[in-house]
Structures are given as structure tokens and as C-alpha cells.
Length: 565
Image 1 (spheres, rainbow, N blue to C red):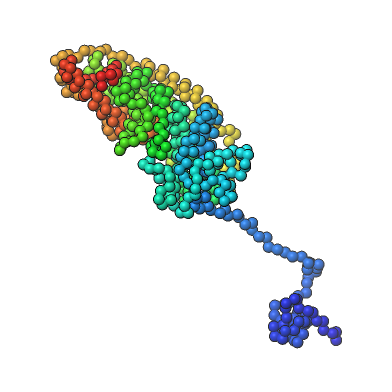
Image 2: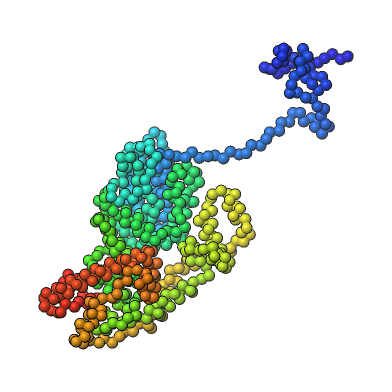
């Protein structure tokens, strides 16, 4: 009988019953030297295929760990939000200068306005406690580092540890934090508003409608600003600021004008800064040609502006700001009122006399056909900036070209660089169907020439419908009867959309779309201007009656200035 072979336990192991340090194997069972059975060991005969594999070790593959960015909070989170807004603003300015032909010094103007906007915020210096998150390059070679210095050098001190934030408009107080240590932070719409204020300072004929249109078409970073932010920066941004940077699929009408008005008042309250008036002459010419109205409207607008004594500047105070106080709203309103005074919109018969302004007839049916003609002549592509108006029913009825345009817009707006698996799953049904070229990009290159040709053709078509009427003097006996039918020779006042005739509804709607304002706001502004003109007529009639030069009837003809008022 062969002697028993004893083996030693590994270091630190022994028999649980007797403490023996040696063991032997018998019938595939392990026993200690004293015969106690050891649990957890079984010996099996190896197969031939497994010969020589005792030295291999198989390890389970571990799934790669995703790096979770640390969410910033407190002052660091607020400063990161401001840096993101600054990055968006710089992208907008870059596109305006490089693609829209704005002057080179426009960037310096917007930088100065942004510096004033963040000056009262308790931002930390870049050297505080070794924090250099705003830029690590000392030589300023990195453009983002030099831009961040604009933020870090505006104020001293540190903010409180509270995580409260406030996107308040702050139009009645300072931008400095209040007693609760809340920061009055700018909003994303303020980036477009600062660009517009830069246009006012530089006297550029750009309107809020232009900026809204460029942003809506994607020519300025706004709607997809949150997606365009670098992923590592977006992951560190506090969750409460995500909602402030995520915009719906369009800019609501009047939203930008409200932001501009708030900033104008805030700059006056905080820094006693007053912005120059609107460079209205080229804008007025664009409004008139955009509506295809005769040149007499321009002269009439100038006369009415003299009566109202307006300089097209933004109001900076007062208990209540009326609709007509906004210079852009006032300008488009004066165009509407002038067209209403010169050319009858309701189709009613009025006395044609030398005292009245209605000496020219404009066929409004022909005008509507000319304005609608270029809309029907548009290409088979979707109009840029109006994709958000597409309903599910419209998608089902689209042809291939429009559906491609809509899917391109959908990909740019909603997919971005989010979860790659989600993006791949959405793109999978459309793989292998790439478009050879994007016709919308080719169309945008000749947009200005095509718009000029469209305006020229509309004027050519409309000139044939304008005719001069024969002026008939008013009989002296019928003067009182005429005054009772049309008091003071004024036009009818329409206060709601339901009261507008067909021609007026088309003109008002086109003007509201051209100025990017709601139709109700335009109607309200026109009503306010007409009330001011009516008050001027009453005052003029009273002065004439006091001088004994008439019987008290005053009719505005558009030929007088405001020297007697």
C-alpha cells in the first residue's frame, strides 16, 4: 500500500476542527491529517481537450464605465451659465460680421454692452483660489480664453452660497444681487437683444424682425444654442439652467421687442445709458417696398411723424409704455395709417375734394393678387424658418422634396449630439437616401436678387391699377351734410380683427408679418395713432375758429407741417 501523500495548507489556512496544517486527498475528497473532512473541494479527472490549460485564467470583461461629469452648483454654476451665454453671443456676432456684412467694430460694441450687463454681478477673478476655469492660456492665444477675461474682470468679490437664481427682467432696479444674494441673470433672448442694441449704437438699419428671421432660419445660433454647446460643458451645467437654454421651435412674436425694451430701461437705470434713435429712413423704405405701396406713403409718414413729434427712440421711463411708443411698431403703424388715409380700404364712397387726401385710387384687389402671386410662385421647397408650422396632417401630404427639408430641420433641431444609439435608431430608416445637394442652400445665395426682382415685378403689375380721380369742390350748402356723414373727414377706426374689411385685413396681416409683431398689437398701435391725429385735428380746428379763419372744420391733407401746433 502506497504511503499517504500529505500537502500543506496555504498560508493562513488550517483545519477548522483540530487546527491541522496538512491535508490529503482520498476518493476525490479532501481530509486533514487527523481525518476531518474538509468542505469546498472536489477533484475531477480532466478531459484530453483540457490538457495543459491549468495555467490559463479567464476574466470576465467589464463594461466600460461612463464618466459622469460633476454638476456645478452655486457661484460656479452661475458663472458657467454666463460663459455659455457669452459663447452664444460671440457666435451670433461672428455670423453677423462674417455673413451679414456688419462692420468690424460691431463686435467691440457688443462686447462693451455685455461687459456692462455683467458688471454688477459678483463674479470671481480668474486667480481666486487657483480657479482658472475661465481660461488657462496666459498669452491669450485661445479666443475663448480672451473672451472669458471679459467676464472675470468686471467685478470683485464672491457671491453667496445660495443656489437661488433669478431670471428677473430687472427693469425697475439694479442688476446687482438683492438682499437674498440672488443673481439677476440675463436670458438667452438677451443675446439677440444685445445684438440689436449694438445695431442702434452703430446706426445700422437692422430690425428685430431681421434678427428673429435669421435666428428662425438657423443663420444665427439661437434655437439650437443648447445643442451646439460642447457636451462636456453641458454635462456640468446645473439642471435649473438647462430649461433657460432650451428654446421652443420658434420665437414668439413681440418676444424680442419686449427684451429690447427691458434692456433699454435697465441700461438707463443702472448706468444712465441712453441709446440713439432708430435709423428709420432705410427701414421705412423697406417697409413700403415690402408692402408694395406708392411713394406718396413715404411723404405722408414724414408728415404724420412731424405732427406726432416723434424721433423713433425707445422710451426710458414713464408709468405706462403704450404700443405706439415702440419705434418699430410706430414706424409700421405710420405706414398703415398713411396708406389708410391716402387710399380707401373699406370701399366706401367719400367726397373727392381739394380738402381731402383721397385723390388717388388704388385697386386693392389687384394689390392682393400681386402680393399673393409671389407666394404661389415659390419653389417646391419649404420656406426656411416656417417648418414649425407643419402639422402631422401636412407631413402625410408632403412630396419628397418638402419631406427632405422637414427631416433636415428636424435633425438639426432635435437630434444634435445626444445619445448616439437614439440618433442611429432614428437615422436607420433613411440611410442610403442622401440628397445629392441641398437646393435650399443654393436658393439662399441668390435670395437678395430674387427679392429685388419680385418687388420690381409687383410694382410693375400694380402700377396699371393706380389712377388719379377728378377732384370736385364741395358745394357750400352740402358742407354740414358731409360733416355729419364723415366727421372731420377722418377714416373709420378699426379696433379688432373682426372689424377689418377684406383689403384692410390683408394689408394689416402682411404688415404685421413684415414687422414680426402680433396683428392685435398692430391694430392697437394704429388706433392710438389715429386718436392722436384726431386730437390734432380738433386742436387745429379750435385754433382756426379762434382766429376767425373758418367754421371749425379741419381735415388733414398731408401737406401741412406742425408749425402751428
